[in-house]
Amino acid sequence: MTGRTTQPPVEPDPHSGRERRAVRLRRAAKLTSVVLPVCLIGWLSWQAVANSTRDVTSHPAVSPHYAEGDRVDADGPSDAAAPAGSPSAGAPAPSPSASAAGAANLPLAGRTVLLDPGHNTGNAKHTADINRKVDIGNSRKECDTTGTSTDAGYSEAEYTLDVVHRARQILQDRGATVVLTQDGDRPWGPCIDERARIGNEAKADAAVSIHADGAPASGSGFHVIMPAKVAAGPADTSAIVDPSHRLGVLLRDTFKAQTGEPTSTYIGQQGLDTRSDLGGLNLSKVPKVFIECGNMRNTGDAGRMSDPEWRQRAAQAVADALTSYLTG
Ligand SMILES: [Zn+2]
Image (cartoon, rainbow, N blue to C red; front, side, top):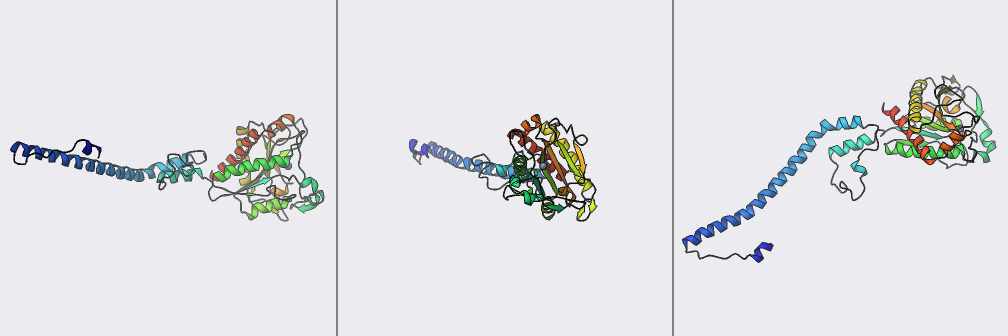
C-alpha cells in the first residue's frame, strides 16, 4: 500500500507502439506483483499442511520409544504443564507427541497408593483411646502408640506426616490416586487395624507405612519391614508376602541410594526385616511395607530427619520405589 501512494502510475499514450509495449510490460509487472505473493502464500500454506501431516505420520514411530524410555521420569517436558506465556501456551490442540509426553509423565495413572503416616501428634492426649487392644490376627495389640521423637522434640508423628505429604505430591504428579490413613485431620489414631483396613478398602495397588525408630542412641540407619506369612483370625498375608518383599527390596535400594542413609546397624539384615507382630502388615490385603527411616534417638539420624531437604529426598525415594514397583 505504501508504494502506490509514493509512486503513482503514469498512464502512457495508448496510440504509440512503443508505449503499447511499455503498457504491456507494466501490466505484466503489475500482474506479477499480485500473482507472486499469492503463489508464495499458497506455497507456505501447503508447506504448513505438509509439515503437520509429516508430524502426524511420524509420531507413532517415535512415541513408544519416548514412553518406554521416560516411563519413570516425571520431570520431563510436558506441554500440558506449560506455564502461561510459554511458547506452547495457547496452542489450539496438543499434538500426538504432546499426548505421548503426557502419558509418559503419568506412569501411575489409574493406580492407587496408600501412604500411612505412622502415629498421630494427638495420640499423647488420648492415651485411653490408643491403649485399648485391637485384634491383629495372631495376638492383640495396642490400637496405636505415641511414637518417638528427637532430643530436640521433633516428633515422629510430625516427621511421618511431612514425608507423606511430600511423597503424595510426587505420586499425584505421576497420576496416582493417593489415599492417606490420616492427614492430621483427626484427634488421634487411627488404630493399626483401621490403618490396614483403609488400604484394603481403597484396593490400593501398594502401601507404605512411614515411621522413624526410637532405638538406643548408639544404633543408626534405616530399615524396611516386610510382612511375614501370618494366617490367623482376620490375618492372612499369604497373598501379599511375595509382592511386599519385591516392594521392600526396591524401597531399601532406592532409599539407600537417594538419601545416602546407611542401612540399620542394630536390626534386620542389610536394611531388611520381616515381622509377624505388626497389625498394619498382618491385616493388610494389599502389598505393604513399613520403613523406619532412621533412629530419632541417634544424633546423626535425628539431624538428617530434622532437615527438610533430607526429608524431600526421603519422600522422593519412597515415591520412586513405589513407581518402580507399580510400573515394573
Ligand atoms: Zn513408629
